[in-house]
Image 1 (cartoon, one colour):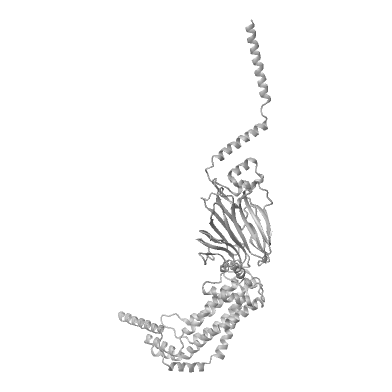
Image 2: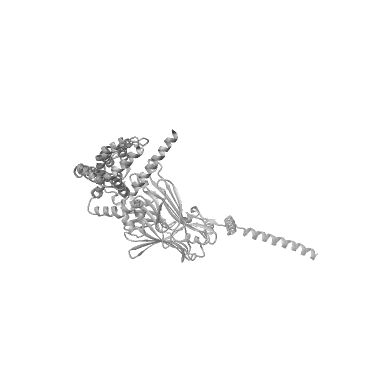
Amino acid sequence: MEEKKFDINSIIGFILIFGILLYIMYQNQPTPEELEAQKKAEQEQVEAEREASKQNETLVTTAEDYSNTQALDSTQRVALQNKLGAFSYALAQPTSGQQTEVETDVFKLVFNNTGGHLAEVKLKNFVDYDSVPIYLIKDKNSSFNITFGTADNRILNTQDLPFQPSVTKSGDNTIVSMKLKVSESSFLEYRYELKPDDYMIDFSIRSQGLSNVFNTSQPINLDWQQKNIRQAKSISYENRYTRLTYMHDGDKLDKLAQMNDDEEVVDDVRWLSYRQHFFSTILVAGETTFKDVAITSTDLVEDEEVDTLFTKKYTAKMPLAYKGGELNENLGLYYGPTDSKVLKSYGKDLEESIPFGWGIFGWINKALFIPLFGWLSGFLPYGIAIIVMTIMVKIVLSFVQYKQFLSQAKMKILKPELDALRKKYKDNKLKAQQETMALQNKAGASPLSGCLPGLMQIPVFYALFMFFPTAFDLRQKSFLWADDLSSYDSIFELPFNIPFYGDHVSLFPILAAVAIFFYMKMTTGQQMATQAPQQEGMPDMSKMMKYMIYFSPLLMLVFFNNYASGLSLYYFISNLISIVLMLVIKNYIIDEEKVLAKIEVSKSKPKKQNRFQKKMAEMMEQAEQQKQAQQKRKK
């Protein structure tokens, strides 16, 4: 009976204990909020394990990953930190806005704290054709960034990463430091040193304590892109002088295509110039040159009625070199006028980026016209300085015109005798040519003596053609009705656009065209009076000369309508002076009776053929023999 009672008591006890346990479990079950937190923790753990499984894969970040880091929740921040690795430290640093502004005597600069590069460059001392301040960088037209690999197989780009700015003074210089931090003592730094009244920025890229962060087996590349902002009244004219220029292999100067898209890979680059006619952005190498630089130029002006904001887009991509696992590049950044005096002051041949002309033409400009015009414009108004320089050039070259007219006078005097020789030997052209050359040689009246002096003017003509469009001193300098001697002098705006001519009428090209017409009318008439009759199978030179009388002024009228008015002013004055000189030489200096007397004296003296004349005679004789042989075979 007691055993049975024990069994019943045991069962009741077990039931009570089980009930108590159920009650305790019920009281301690998690709330819905606790269940949600537990679920999130489990998801984070799963995500962390997934990220950990990708440790051997290369991770590439984009701007979207951390453009709004302040708004990220904890899960997203953990994921981003896993993607950035050591550089996630930069996200936790305090920020002082999106941009950092600094001003000097010549600049107003705005730095983007994301990417650490320049977001805006304003030149304080200049305005464009519409009185708007000159901006070389604005509204994201430029990018400057570095792409590199990390030891934990990530690919990062500095343009997307947050830099911590600081602005300090070092004497009169302003130091802008942009640091991408891994820790307080480890960082990648862009350092800009700005000097008073100086367009050159000392720019350095250096790292500290990142030798274990960088993956030095992967390339590290500097990528620099820029779309040049239109600054001039005629975008087509400005685009003609906008060009990517670079110096490499010591002192070799090269350019990408002027009006077409172009690309090139060059080595040992000393500097790269993103030239925009009268303003330039130049990247200067430091102690070592840039290696294997891939550069491109894209023409953005297909239709000047539509493409009105930018002229060309330039890109340059170049590898940087690690030194002991760190970066240490000391460079120069020039933002300023394409002015030969300013560029030459830096002693790095930067003035060579200005298109003065190749070979002897460039030498004439640099050695003669630039110093001469600089001296004249120092005490004369710029328009008057052009006129005075033109007069000086024409006076120096007046002996050339004298030689030309003297040669024409001799040929005019000899023309009756030459015509008689051609008539006498009309059936023997070889003999006629030989006798003609002999008479000209005795009289000292070779046709070449009139051509060679004219050829001497070509280097001067072309040098000045290159000088005026690139003369920075002429920019926005007025003269008479021309508001800007570096641009066209519009006196009337057309309601439509004429192909190759434009939508306006410039006056100086009209005046220059009229002067050229009268000058060519006078000189061509003189030449035609002394010209030999047309030979069979040869072009009619008299007709060609008549066409040139009208074609040359028309070319001046159309082609120079959009060119610098200073250049048209030069041609106008130059041709006026040429007309005056021709009249003076012809009517007051060259006396045909004296010239005839000299010819008679010269003809009486024995003359030996020089080596060239002998060679010409032999060639003519061989040609005549071959012609006779062909005629015999035909018969």
